Image (cartoon, rainbow, N blue to C red):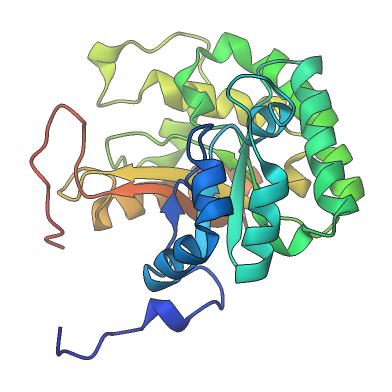
Length: 276
């Protein structure tokens, strides 16, 4: 406690230093944290350095603002975030097709009409979409390709990021890795160390979004497990960089990690430490 911190995050609002995946949203607590006890919540978040937060399923959350059950309270949260100088990365989901498109546009219109642009750190276009089979990417990306220009029309300078998975083995043969990921043959779990099915889904997503990639500013990764060869390590960062090299269409994109945890899997509670 007596040691001088490397950087005091309680006083820093300039750029992304550290963020929190979550922002205290739930039907039962939003009115409590952001209404009755807003001053206490503000103090706690500022003391924690929580200047940068992340919300999952943001368009679905906003769509519940008039619901009788599981209601959301954007009219409480947005003024709170703006008043305190907090930024939020909003994860949007487009699996619902036209319904999701309408939700997203209504959400962005609300932000712009109420001048809440300063709250928005960016939009994450899907949470771990690569977990789905690649056959679902054309329909999903069709919606994204309709949504992206609508977002940019309303918020031209906003950052947009797409979630990608990368291969497990740090394969030095980048061209071979790219060829495997774009192969028509499905990859099964037993072939994990040559590539993984989610990598193929990522490659298919890039192919389906080819007409919109110029509007994408960030590539988003999730990093779990701090020991080699897991992602939350130097080895993991090298894999992320290698993946960007293997996909020329991603050249110049910035990298953003929106989920980071030293522990790897929920069923492996070893609290892996950073050794590198």
